[in-house]
Image 1 (cartoon, protein in one colour):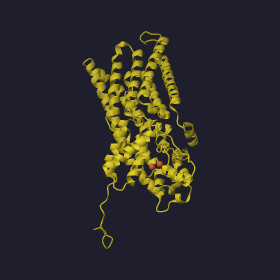
Image 2 (spheres, helix red, strand yellow):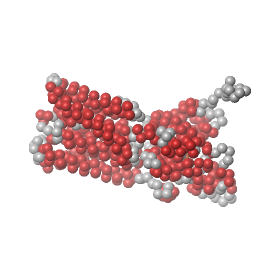
Image 3 (cartoon, protein in one colour):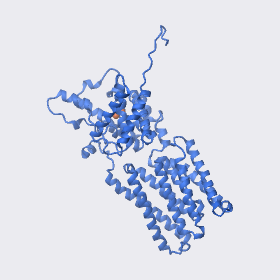
Image 4 (tube, helix red, strand yellow):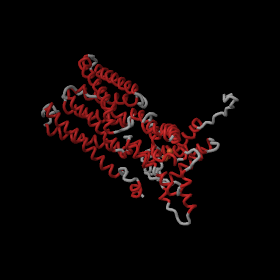
Length: 488
Ligand SMILES: [Fe+2]
Ligand SMILES: [Fe+2]
């Protein structure tokens, strides 16, 4: 089946989990190598064998190797255990590890000048726009741990407070930068978050340093360095986020805002060339956003995925019901030809997304939103026209089953939207039954076998759609049209 799907996809395949683990090891090896080289250069530059707690240069570097390996193994375990979905987006993982490595290297370099120059929340600020809050917090904590370890090994014990303070400030400021504000949809929230994190950093250092010996002087002595690190991390975050977004073609919150703008090229084409599909996509987006919220996924990513899920229909607009006004071209062609046109919109959509440089996470949904389901209407039509057996595989969508929860959400909301719209008098009970059957059928057909969605998530999605359908499909009160066409 896998082989067949790969062939059907015309060369579009996704990294299977096994090779993903292999690449993950590669990404970590590169991370380790870069950090290690930075350290070697650092030790030569600053310590030259002295002042590293009495260790020789070789002993110190060996110690570094073991400690870094320990940190990286811990990070690897975090990713594999609780962020498995990142294995399907190695580009995103590579970008996150590049940012992480960059922050550690920056900290190693600035330690040479002053320990208080360490950017304690930079990793959180850089990672947050591209990933989950937990990733931002964990990577920030690991960056601070490694930076603190470099401090321990390179400073005299007399300066040990700097190590403890870096760790504490790192944890507190990382948490503020990560959790203090909701999703980052506007530039102003982003600026506000950076500013508040900076202020908190100064306050935390102020409290820590002045309570250490009940003396305010150590804080005043170092305030210039602390201020410089705060301004430095604000500057780096502002400059690097758009660069990383562009280089890795990732979905940051800013990018998502651009994608769902109705003036975005593909969305504009959809609204003018296929208004039926455009309206369907908007309705799916409304459901998808509510569902993503209900199960703790990114609602803006869900909305963007819904906007683009059917762009492949642009290649054959009039063959899709929602764009037809009376005339149905399928009446004049064979069911296998009809099925071919319909099932192709998944791969066509992926190609269009790639041509328009739509990030992979959004583009992938075009392939995943119908999974490998059969197009029963044309399959049954073909069966009714022939005496022999009809091969169901010839009537399956060219697709991959969803690899993430957002993919599963779009799959459910897409079918739900069309089915609820087709209902005569939808009631809560009817919609609930319809969804339960639809989800059950997809489960039985193995459509969710490749994503980490749980039964609890599926129930939350079902209830979210039942709760939302009333608001989205409310019936308008019939107007009485007066003699001059005026509503009365
Ligand atoms: Fe579709
Ligand atoms: Fe659709």
